[in-house]
Length: 267
Image (cartoon, rainbow, N blue to C red; front, side, top):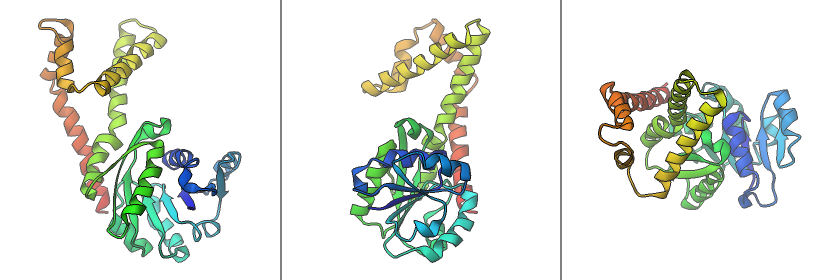
């Protein structure tokens, strides 16, 4: 199988690096295309890739094409791609807000998989939700899933509405976590801890809490109850967040990202 990644930005390169050693590629190197001369020079120093700076050298003979460009570049890219395409090719979009129907219409091809990746894919801890057009067979979809799983795990969803919804949870979600972490770091610094000690306190607290959650069948609410003794320090913090409606604000933020994803898909 010949796999091509168009776009070597953060997401494109992350998935390219993950897929490069997949047995699905058989004896073929993963193909990657970009237009930035400096990036191309760097990519050519990595032996796991076949690097291209012109699409007509790689696109026509690729079986599976991952599209990892900024959404606002997609329309111009699709115009360039369209004359080079062949029947049977599968297109996997890593772009936010670009619908399957839009891709099908602009490429005049039917086999499209739409995904929502997230940043932790860079460290093999990503979660990618995906859905596909009806013309993608079960075997083809399994093949795509196996490739997506090289960067973490993947979740098949039934409709594109869930792709937009997962944008608000997993796609944008790492930023919510970093926002919370930054707030705790700032508090630690104000309390007098050093930069190093603040980072250790916050990062290990998050890592430990996630590990506890993953290793036990206990809800976050139950964990809070285990930690927060009545009248104690943790309960004082939880009461403060409840009084300031933090839970609802986080939910509102997730829905704001969801609504924006839907809005982008209509443009």
